[in-house]
Image (cartoon, rainbow, N blue to C red; front, side, top):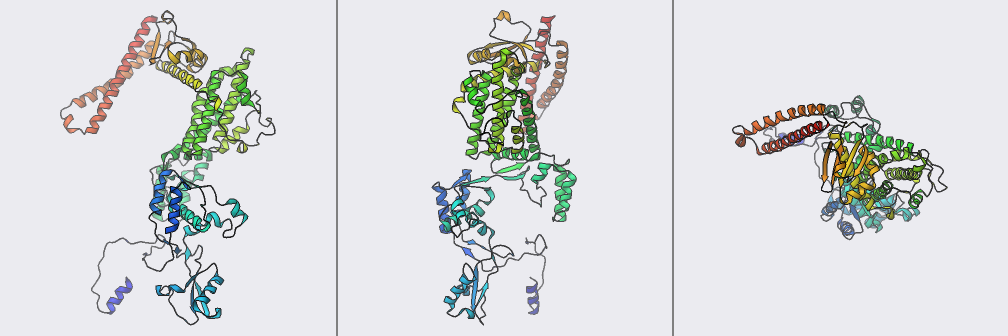
Length: 640
């Protein structure tokens, strides 16, 4: 622009200049204006390579997971253009092209008319041989000038699967390790890298470099923004693993190479997101948390607070396993423990339930891994530990393991064997997702080192849990599901009447269908988890006291609880009356607001709909409180 202005002035054609708003590209480092310049470049015709690559996906030779990314693959490769492979950089693989001239010739290498003088060869000697044939003179009369451009990064990267094995030589490594099987990478470089590897693999080796491509989600911040230094929202995994104070986060920014404005923006973001710094989470919690996020789909909107939540799961796993180890401290496992347990004839319904859940859990996680559903695998493993092992079985076996009487010897052995197997299998199930804590706990299991020559030294070498189909028991799981419904109702009754945990209660069940048989066969389990002193299934009406609270679960189950001597009715009535007052006041205010003049005309529909829902909720709550007060008054009258 400056040169043009000076030339106009010299010719007397310059009239003047004025500011004109426009978008200019500026270098982020120097601030210089970036001026586009058209220059000759090297291109690769990709038409044939692209067609072979799309055909490979269409005919099933190449599998892209998740499959919905196939449309991106076809969009790019079905509309392929010539690929510009030259870059004006100081690093990279220099393009193997030489410009040939005779001594004394002065040809412009960027002139398209001289394109025939460009010679491509594996090395300079190869290019010289071609120059001799082209120019018809001796080597001593020829001058070769190599192009200073380097190959596009993705060109070099596209050669990676086979070039690192010694290609183009047919080395032992190439024969042994090419092609590979699985490529795992980010969805954002499906075309830039993956397609280039496939195209070049097919073109140069006539073989697909891999048969499956798994594309993982992109990690973004919790607002869904791409992590970038300029936004100041980059989270260093090491800072999540080891923890980091706010001061350390800010000092890291000061020591970087960001512009002053970017540093200020990043510091402000840190103060908002991590006012107390980043708590130490450990690598297991970070890995487990990232796996949980993969069920979202294309992006992971990472919130460190959720990773902290999975740190709590690590603590739960540690504490629960350490507690369970006290139950099996005097237990000696065998190398064939699962077969021994199965053939012992000593298993109770709860033991069979746990083994069945163990098999189903292993099946679910294996299926998810096989189909690259890592988020679902994480959820299945989490559910096995929390829902099946910790919340149910571990609680059910407490009284069994604590009872060391001779009469309980067989039940106790079966419970210990089942618990040991559930812990050991569960740790192996979790190991790929949480390697460190599972290794530590696995090594602490009793009997470690005494299970024969085939026993692995580390959980890393232990076989992954497999499913034994005949140990799955749908009938037992259905029965336990019924029992858990009963237990839920028992707990709900205790909670609604504020029964203290130490006070055991008498339960009466009116059950039919599967609930009747399930409850009858597992009354001990109902007493254990429902905090019951006794559980009577289908008693005569004359056996049921009048001082009972009732909850109707469904048409097949009603649970009643005797509350005589367990509840201070006056205290409960007073408490409920206060709650009723705090509910009635906003209810009346809302009714007045909705009955006011102009409400229907002036209030937006969305707000009116929200008010109706709020009103319904308050009315329902008021009715429930009034019913509870009436129930307490009835019970108080019966005991007086």
